[in-house]
Length: 595
Picture (cartoon, rainbow, N blue to C red):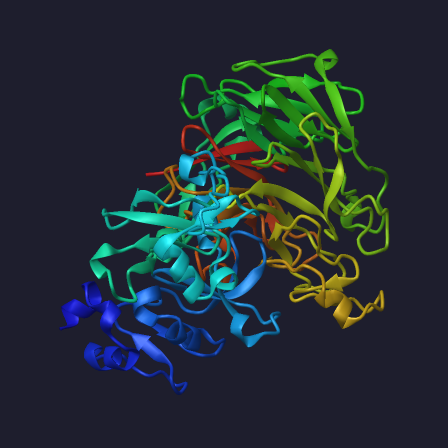
C-alpha cells in the first residue's frame, strides 16, 4: 500500500488517509502541522501554506514539501517572499493582497524555466483561432484549449497560474517520459491520459524539483591552510620572497598569476585572455596565458593615456568591443581575438557620466570607480557612487544607469544606492545584482553592507532609510511609511566589509560541490571597523532557502594580526575553469584551482 502512495496511487488519497497510511507523519509543536517522512519537511499554516495545499489538491497536485519555509528572492521579479518549495511548485506568501484567496500564490516557475526558449516553436506567438474552443490571450499571444483550459478555469485561472506562455507540445519530463505539456507563467501543465476520467487527468509539472535542485551540497568549509605558490619569474621581487598562507576549502591551490601596480576589475576576452583595469595608473592591462601554464606570460599595457579615461575601472567585452568605464565616461575600443594592445586614438567615448569631488568619506576615498556590465538585453549597466557618506548630494549619483551599447538612451535604472560597486547578471534568471557599500560612522556593526537584485525603477532608500527592512535614518526625518515603500537588500554582508566585485557561478569550473548557483564576493576589507576584518573572498548561496545563511568565507588570510598584505577587489572565472582574484594592495592577480 505504501508503494502505491509514493508512486502511482497518490491521486486517490485524502490527506487524512495519507497521514494514516504513511504511519510516520508526525505533528510538530504547532497544532495541525504535518511532517512528511519521505522528505523530512513540515507543512504548517504559519503563512497559510498548509490550508492552500489542502484546498488545491494536496499531494496529487503539489507533491511533498522539499524545503522549509524561508525568505527567498523570487527569480523573476527580484522581490523577497516567504516561500516553500514542493515537488511540483513553490508557494509564495503575498501579505499585500487584500483578498485572502490570493495571500498564497504559486511561484513564477513556469516563466523562469521557459526563459531562453522564446525562439522555439511552442513558445512563438500565435494568432487567435476564433474557433469557440480555445481562449486566446493577447498579452502573451497564446491559446488555451481542451482539458488544459478546463483545468485552468476550475483551479483558479489567471490569479493562480497566470497567462499561457506556450502552446501545447510534447516534451520529455525529468522522469524520462514524454508528456503533452503547456507552460504558464506560474507552472507547467502535464496531460496524463493514464488518469483519464479522474480529477487528475491534468497535473502540474515537476518544476519545484527541476528548479530547486534538492537535495544539494552544503557550502564547503574554508578551514584548510595552503601556501601561496609564487612562480620563479616573480621571486626577484622582495615582496614575493615572503611566504604567505591562505585558507580555503580542502584541495585548494592558489598561485600568483600576474602583477600590475593596482589591479581592480577584470574581464575575460573571447579568446580567454584576462584583462585587468588599474585605476592607480590609468591603464588597462592584458595578462595572456597562451601556453596554458597557469601563469601570465606578461602583464602588457593594452591601452593608456586616453584623455578623459582617467581611473578606468569596469571592463566588459561585447560585440567586437572592449568597454571601459572610467570616472567621467564610458569608452569602447574595437577588439579582435588575441589583440594585445591598442592606441588612444582608437578610443570611442560613448557616454558621459556624473563625476566630481566627494566629501566626508572615510580615508579620503572619492567613490570615483565606475563598474560596468552588460545585460542579456544587450544594454550597458553602470554604477555611480554617491558624492558623500550621508547627505542629500548630487542627484545624478548613488544610482545605476542603463545605456544602449552605443551609449545612447541613457536613463536611471535604479537609485538610492550609496555605492553599488559589483555588478553581475544572474544567468538563470536575467536579474541584475549588485554589492552595495553602506554608510559609515554608525558603529562597528551597523549598518550591514548588502547584496541585492536590482529592480528596474527600484529605490533602495539611501540616504533616508537604512537597514533591513528599511527604517528611517533620524538625520532626515522621513516616516516609517516612506521607508517601507523602498526596496530592501537581499543578503547582508557584515558592516564596513566593503564588498566589491561579484560573480555568479553556475558550476562547470573545478570548484567543490556546494558553490553552484550563488555569488562570489570580493570583500575589500574594513575601513571603519575596529578590529579590522574582511580582506577575503565570500560566497552567498542562492539555492532555495540558503540565502538566509548570509555570506560564507571562501578564501581568507590576507589579514594577519590586524595588518593586511592584500585586498581582494574582483573575482572572475577563466575559460580554463580557474577562479581569478585581483588584489590592488598586493598588486597581484591570483589563480585558484581545486584538486
